[in-house]
Length: 386
Image 1 (cartoon, rainbow, N blue to C red):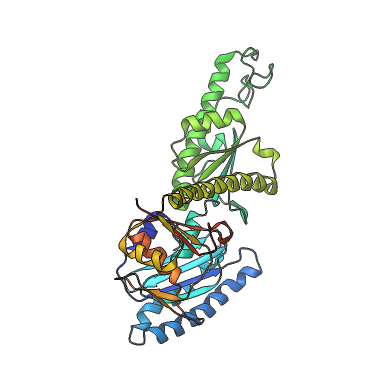
Image 2 (spheres, helix red, strand yellow; image 1 turned 135 degrees about the horizontal axis):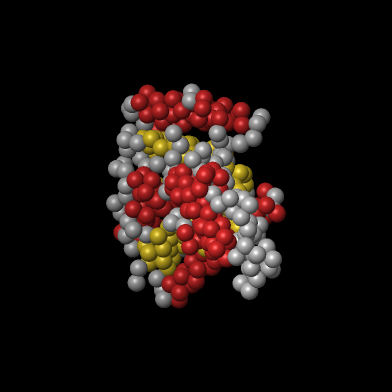
């Protein structure tokens, strides 16, 4: 019932017409016994959501709006496979459930639009990934962020070994040739040295490797990359990196690579190396955003003033909008004029969500960034079209 969070899902939610919308976010635990509390916490948040619904929309069809949320609570199998977070979004015309790779703060929201800023931040974070550990005769898949990391149970249709993929077509084990693709008599990768068996038998062994890698590529793409939508980094020796990349048709496969025999890494060592790669990528993206904002600031087409940014979001004048993560400003954005109405109190609407979604619907590139990486103390920073 859970579906991947991707751009098409976000666009669908962004472009829904105004209607009574319910949003629920919560962290979840993977490991027993903490995982047994997930459904209980969901039930408590659902009770809060129900109260908010009745207070804000007393004349709405409460039973119809809450029914899919309540049905999810009773789906025992759903709660058996938690991730690190959960978001459930429902309205008069839609219902979406997403298990998340990142923990999210608990929150419930009722309004005429779904609360999408936390979901947008997760899709943009860029630190969620899958790592394919590949050798000539072993396949493992891991999934993680900088905060969490775990091994993925491979779909039964993914071949685990050359025997799985090739069966009786596999080159006989007694043929000469090094199992890692170079002559047993020579140094690793030395083209001047060959095994006594000659290059012909080695060619056959390399063909087996390529057939195996091609089968792995097709299955990983179909049953893991496509459903998850996550970037895929490759963990393999250099010769296997080259061979797999020359074969792969997986659009999620990135240039990020860990060139090492995956059999020499335990899960924690792999997590650290992968996290370093993703952190470096994220820093490069943030630096590029700061550079864009700095250029626009020098040209007089930027602002960190909430009132000015709100009006520009409605008018479709924003090219790039930076929004501080996990910040809240109580208020409402007038969808016609862009004027801001400030609010206070625990039940106040988050004005930043309104500005974020309005700017996105009107074509702006929106990035949710850590508050400490914002260009100023303001929770928003906009670049206007020239």
